[in-house]
Amino acid sequence: QVQPVESGGGLVQAGGSLRLSCAASGRTFSRYSMSWFRQAPGKEREFVAGINWSGVINYADFVKGRFTISRDNAKTTVYLQMNSLKPEDTAVYYCAADPSLIITRTPPYWGQGTQVTVSS
Image (cartoon, rainbow, N blue to C red; front, side, top):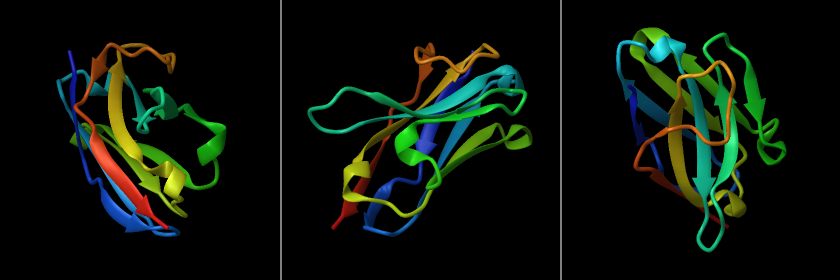
């Protein structure tokens, strides 16, 4: 079992950048697909990006070209580099883990979330 813990959120101006980190405990991290989701106030949680253990990456259309997901198996950490941030990117960002090669929308293990606020 892997337990994700997010960090790196904060307040940034529109056009700025942030890098989120997700440290996941567990010796089998390298065999998990890792994903980022977000939930804005009054909205449903939505998929942002995912990376499986063989390096396949999926992005939501609204972040393509702006966000980059990566992982470091030696550090059991996954990252989300967010550039060209927009006010509509304001949300709580969650890291999630799935012991599957497939990047699913219903991973079983979730972190507590980190707040990202983008000011206009």
